[in-house]
Image 1 (spheres, rainbow, N blue to C red):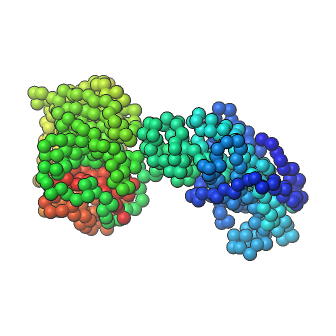
Image 2 (tube, helix red, strand yellow; image 1 turned 180 degrees about the vertical axis):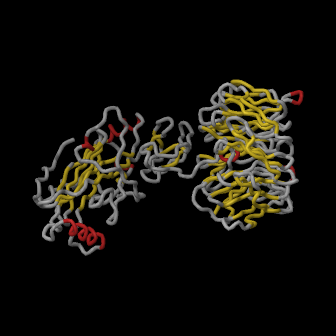
Image 3 (tube, helix red, strand yellow; image 1 turned 60 degrees about the vertical axis):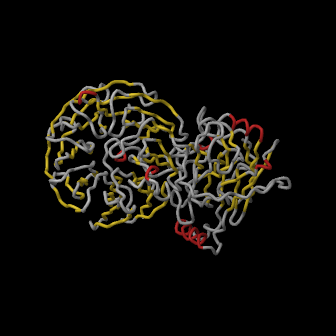
Length: 630
């Protein structure tokens, strides 16, 4: 890169380099941007050494007058964070935009300048702190973008205009080849003090945003450069980075342009219980025991009984929530909605028969949505597009939810086969091919649980069986005395099992040795417990029971109606639905409250999901509710 400014001498106060003529340079209004996370500081010489065949990565800067990456580091010297080129100017040849470098005078009356002057005075003699020079170096990571000048020395209160020139055709060619249209101009800056050591080096970037947007999936140029929502070439759903504006797939949690830019911070709830261990808890933050309806589908319950939907347990990931639903006539579909506003993301995907509503459920992994119907049809759908990937017919009926064993692991499907027996199917998640199947002594009525290279399965005969994930061979099996309506829960090397006879058992996940058992109630334990690492929250026909890790029943929240769905624990607050159609909450003070009512004669029998501050609850009145957690 050309160096159009003379280097700064040691300890001398040089005037700023002359600004280039700007008669032909259009002024670009910078787009407002969020602040960026600071990178570690480094010497100016190091930042200009490009790495061969390396994707560009650049430093961000969030320094203010009160904070910096190191004590004494100067504030970010540019007047903008982003330069956005208008589409009308991006037509050919070369186009330019500009930014201003500035060195606030230490003698300025502003609060920020006064704080900087006070900090400098504490380190330097009084005669020196007002005569500092701000030295700035600029560089580009791409060949089609040039900055002039690339180096500047600014005295107190001085400004310097920097011209950023873009070769339009080369920029278009780079975007067509897959490079992001949002690129950084990197800055390294420090203060030089007469007769004293310079300040620590600060780093940062000003982003140049071209009026182009490129699909991260197929690399085609998108027509709408501002906020493209969907790629017209491959129908990838897109989300603009809140920091640099680059388009990203909904599947991404961090920006493809710069991984320090977070797109989604809330963890997903991609299957029953939030994960393959079915713990049903999220430790994040501190929630409040308060709910308000964000949206619902349909908006109100249908007045026609034939149109009322019977929902399976919802799952949420990537900013969408999905579930299977069927009418009383057996017309079944998979649905997906935007979690923020409830907008349907694609036309309902038809299923040959329903997914079992009470214990069945869909699952999401690696951009795929899985479900298995009661009659044994296992389907895989592209979760962003609603299109078929594969379908596989299994020899058996399915009553429990399907579980992906990690992003790259097999899909686990419990099936009831002929003759009163059962089996666990292992399917290739990418193709639907049956990899293996492990026979079970009795019918499995609930979802399997996966973790630590092992799959755990309950069956109607009362057996808890551990199966090797890689080979499908049984490792151990124990009899718990009675059957199950709940899935196993795996947490911290222990497996918890809730029987239909009211007993809760704990086994060692590696050996199958019984650690403890406790009779929680004489009522049926009809749902899968949740576990937050300290307590188990056990749903029963007489309420919700709290059991400690040591196997001691410590509390009961009694209700007049059964609790069948799995509870959810978020930030220390317990949420659960009951067959009276109400959603209850228990706050940190352990007081039970009614938080939401789904209506007269409505029931909640399926497990809810939680994602992005929203609790998703399906009721027997046919409505899927998105309830914001305060």
